[in-house]
Image (cartoon, rainbow, N blue to C red; front, side, top):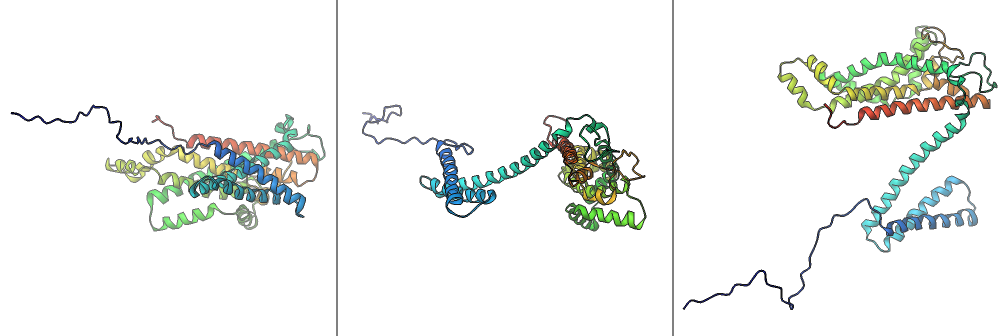
Length: 371
């Protein structure tokens, strides 16, 4: 007789008396989403703290001033926001929301400051920009009290372009050569050069102007011309170009250098035919950053170029005006119409720097799929 062993059927229905089985599903947590509780806590705390500070700051306590009101409002908002959030959330959520509020407030302050400066400058100078002569004439024979349909900033625009162009001719090969020496040649002295370049990056512009003034104008007897201004601007541009090019060369993959050397190329051939063509967009970015730094400097050109009201395209003879120097002279004149011309020149300078930074962003971004 054969015994038969009954095996349980895996597909059989579960017993109604068996305990329920909890099904746990892993759902990803969305980090950058705001729930209705987050939104209500934020806006409620913002409005409530503002009303409380307005009542205490302006009606009960003897305080006044917009800055003090905003500071007290921000502190009260953080305290109220933390209290409201702590009512129904753990400690880590409270800290996370507070840090998020502080970081976003900092970004808002920076953006608000920049927007305020740009809008204020545009509002004060837009009247001058509506006249075509503002871009085609100079200020020769034009009084500060003359109407805006007389005179312009052509001499300042051309002066800035000439001075910055001369500075680029000198600083571009020096900056890239300095970066190549620090990365490709090396040695004990390269550390000293890198330290000096990093220190010169934070050099005050007035120091650069005084250096060129005492060296070229006082010692060598060169008059205040566009050449002296270009030299002062070049002192400010050189460390920016060298430091930016140094960073670009340091992040280049070392395998390209090793492959070139393994194929029998010399170090100079590797630098010329492999390294520099590979980092060409980064070097262009370094150049544009240096130009953006030099084109807006006022202190160096104030000491070295001298202000002029007439058109001068010769950087070796007679004073040469520039956009920063024109803005400085116009705003401190005290005449409303001349001040409007100064703000108009400031708008042109802002647009020029903005265009340079847009080009920098375009060159610095990574182009996927391009060889």
